[in-house]
Each structure stands twice: as structure tokens, then as C-alpha cells.
Image 1 (cartoon, rainbow, N blue to C red):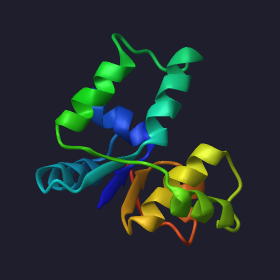
Image 2 (image 1 turned 90 degrees about the horizontal axis):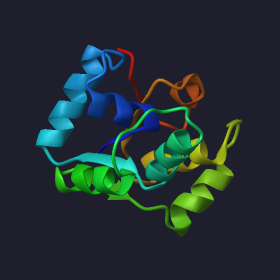
Image 3 (image 1 turned 45 degrees about the vertical axis):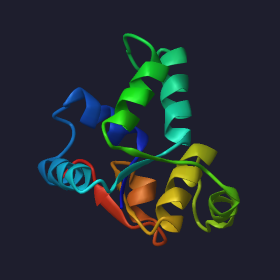
Image 4 (image 1 turned 90 degrees about the vertical axis):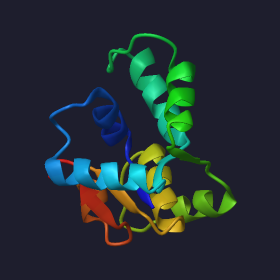
Length: 132
């Protein structure tokens, strides 16, 4: 499974040039193979970015979420195993959302598309650099 970090999801949806060629190709392949996922907490983070005016967005975020899920992206809820994995991550400074997204990738044995240097360099998280 290929899992999108928050900015990778937004970049993919907006067709942004910030998303690298390799990352875009992997996302397209996973989308076609129905193996593209997103941690449920990612939608909360997008909502907070919009609320705090750090991300411009038109329309209903709930409708956007439903459209993404209906298009074939799999939402991966944070269960107890993911929550405990997030809590147990060593050498991972940062916010709880990044921990939960990383733990989601670990538990689902997926690769995380991200441009976050902390996630890219953490030994427990298999990643794809979203800028490449």
C-alpha cells in the first residue's frame, strides 16, 4: 500500500508541480491498483490547515473527503495498534499527527509519500520522497 502524507494528498489533488515525477507515477500506479491510502487523521489535519488559513480551499471539506474515498482512495482509521505504534516510535520528535500518519504506514506495511525530512529519515518508516 502507498500512503499519502497530508501535503502529498493536497498536492496530488491540486495537480501541483511540487509533487515529483517519481512520486506522481507511484501514486498513479497505486491508484490504478486500488492500493492508495490515507490516514484518517490526515483529513483532520487538512481541516485544521483550512481553519487556521494555512491552506486555501473552496467548498466543503466533507464533500472533498467523500469524493476522494469514492474515487478509490482507502481511508485508514487509527485503531489501538496504530495509536500504540505512534506512541512507541523512538527518535521521532514532532507533532502527534505526523506520528499517527507514520504509524499508519508502519502498521499497514506501506510506503509513505512525504516531503517531511523527519519522516523521510526515520528508520522505522518506509518512505517515498514526494519531491522526487
